[in-house]
Image 1 (cartoon, rainbow, N blue to C red):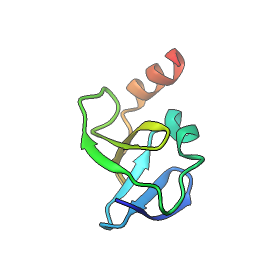
Image 2 (image 1 turned 45 degrees about the horizontal axis):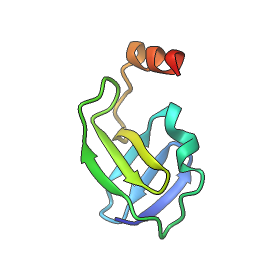
Image 3 (image 1 turned 90 degrees about the vertical axis):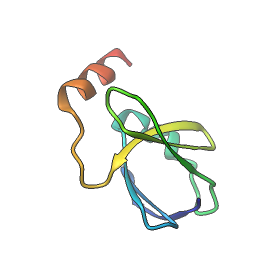
Image 4 (image 1 turned 135 degrees about the horizontal axis):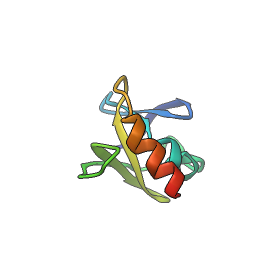
Length: 81
């Protein structure tokens, strides 16, 4: 899938109109994304996210836009690097 919109650094909308919130610790991996970047959405078993976007730069953890991150788990992951 291609990027339809990425006007907010932490939200990406794909050409299928799905919207994803990017994990704060993975934002740096999205800096080189362009509209023509190919991304694949895959479900994952992760303590902080339900899905990942896989493309140039590797895997980025995401949750559907509008959902909330599990605060305790996010703090733990960000603290551990």
